Image 1 (cartoon, helix red, strand yellow):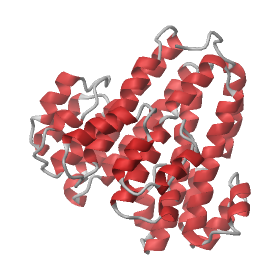
Image 2 (tube, one colour):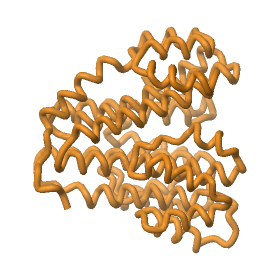
Image 3 (spheres, one colour):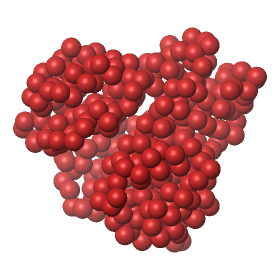
Length: 349
């Protein structure tokens, strides 16, 4: 499965370590939250986003400029990492970054479902996975969801999408498609990572913890909304703490008991205050942010346990994606007229 070459771990990890100081600091987010959109563009145009801001300012302005520049920078940064990685490491990173294929396919399906314009869909495309920009644009140009599914024939995403399509006569929701894509990604990743070294075992453990957070998000959302369908069919097998048995047990509980039962899991301390705030806010937003912080912190911890492995690279990938998400949240919040306080609560810092 892997290349016989183990990979240039020392070199790649050194290159990634050199990139981390350029990530935005907590105090810089505080400054951004006080700026208007043109000021945000100018500010990030003086950072690592300068090239993209300069190039795209001829075509875009306002929030569109911020969004296009940040995602273009994100994709370019991940392409750099793949380019300077070799052997097994390159293969592991490439497969981990398939998450952006999933992101892009979901974005295109949602765009078609809501009859969005091509330009609107392109704003949220991040060609950092296996599927490249030109291919993704061809998918966007297709007219229907069925045509998009057919357009993915020959990729690993075709079968799970077709399986979902066969379950429904009329497309009234994208949930079956999105759920099957997530399952396909994590099932593939769990099978791809060979636990033949301590580093790969740690990476596998981290992916399984990531599956726990995805499943917990799904469980909380569906229970909070009192969803009456088969929840187990929407959950992903392979988690670390939330095994199939645990998930089945939690899925059978009403929301209030589910919340109480979470106290027995290791991740509860990280999300406790957010969980306690659900009744006050009547929203899961704070819990979702807390889970994202939990995963980021865990990636950082794992990267220090084995510094010459894929783990520092994974931490940087998640941290960089989180930075871009934060910048876009601030810009969109400003455009929507949200207060600085609300915007700050939406950030993962």
